[in-house]
Length: 268
Image 1: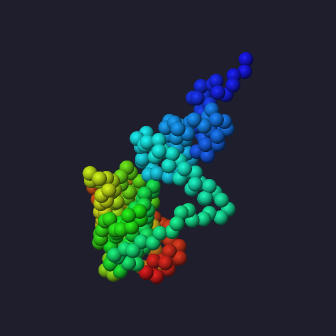
Image 2: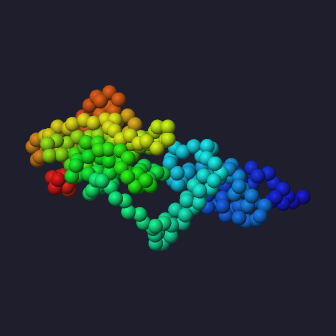
Image 3: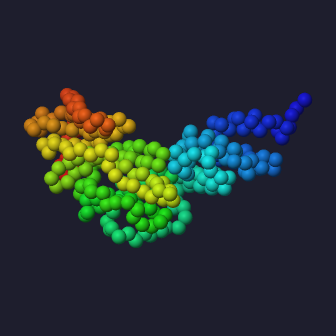
């Protein structure tokens, strides 16, 4: 006896889709009227978004708990994820939605990072040697100034945690260089709309050395360094700090750095 698709358990029908992105889920649900009822099912959207998340980012903060979202919120995340994928996979991606201009009280800001899934941006002012947080949706500064340096030479990959985003910065000023971890906390306060900008780590660096290529993990932050005073004997070193204890470790190597690195550093 041959069973019709509508007679099979939903769990069996949806099982192969657990390894597919959301566009496959939607296409499958559109194959007949019987399956289209899944568009009004929270479990369908949660499963589709979680499956997609294993393959690529979806249109919400990385740590957002999808199980706490309403049906309308899940549908909106799904629609935005589909629109973004269609746009980025097209031969000529284009701007989605109207362009917006924001008038801020601080001018000449450079973007450092955007908190994934939000409209919060960490910005740097070379003129004021400070960091600021901009909420693009509200069109205003929501945190800062936080004293930095006139130049940011390098940034590390970011650390994305629930309600918090951190990034290592290699800072350079007129008098010294330093490494710092800028932390942006959001969703604070009773209204869940407060933002806090701070450093969770900052350390001045020796003036006699040259630094580049900052890196950061959950336990360590550090930079590549050339500590030699005689530049004819340049050798790479790795300067690392334990974030919790601030204990410093220098790892020496016998590797000569590329000349192009120093040309770039000395241009600053």
